[in-house]
Image 1 (cartoon, one colour):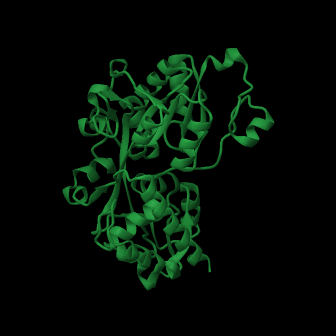
Image 2: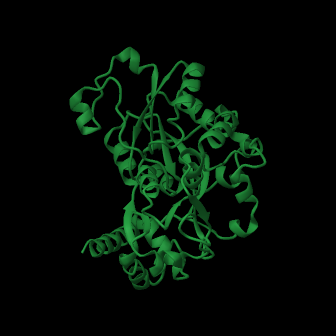
Image 3: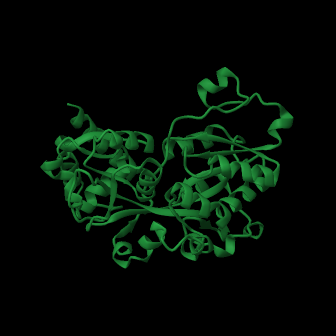
Length: 364
């Protein structure tokens, strides 16, 4: 995902010279003593780990300052790890990218014995083959969620129950989907009753996406983009992360309603990893343990709005009225979740080339 989920622009990293800031990578001209007492986290911006209250708690617990760097796509995340070894300690990864990171030697195995919360993690996520290889855990399951639809409840009544609302002429010029090739293919596959991760009829996928042209108001890339457009009443219906819908309601009082279409939604789960050459691997594992703890998660979900925790103990501490608890308890919804599966680089290239062609058509 799912993203998913989460960006507000590049952050300024304290202590970097102007030249280093300009390129975003490279040697960090940091005071050695200061560098020894900080860990660097690579994530989407605004996605949990950089909540100011959370980093403050961890810094007091550990004595280590938490510094963030951000990516705007999974490919950018991988590129940063490849080109800046020894820079990052903790890295957020969608589960489908972890096997590639293991294969390329970009992450290191974690030690479950060092995690006080490891036993409480949902086994199906914690022990997923995507996270476990050669008998070792290479990622710690953190959160999972869904990418679904939303509707402007002030303008769309009743709320739609089908993905076909995206193609409904009544919403021409008032539709948005995320600018992501893989996600676009997923939606078109679900809309044409195909295997989301491995559609057989790519022509049907392409034709379905081409047919969205008169509908599209914009292709969104971040929560900030999406929320501003919804605030300006630019959308009738749009795809969005479920947790982002809750944040839009809770933080910005936007008139959005969650829609779980009958064709299904995109399911995903994320893990936290320790970079291969992490300068502070032990502290990185302490940070991850805090991130999966009820102490962090319950506050993140109740005050901000978060994906669903992979920690059963954290989920159990949420208020009974919490929307994520109600959603997970709804069997009809759970039966409509299609989890993303890894695909080959060749298949990704095919999807990207198709999406580039579709976007060029939209721009005409």
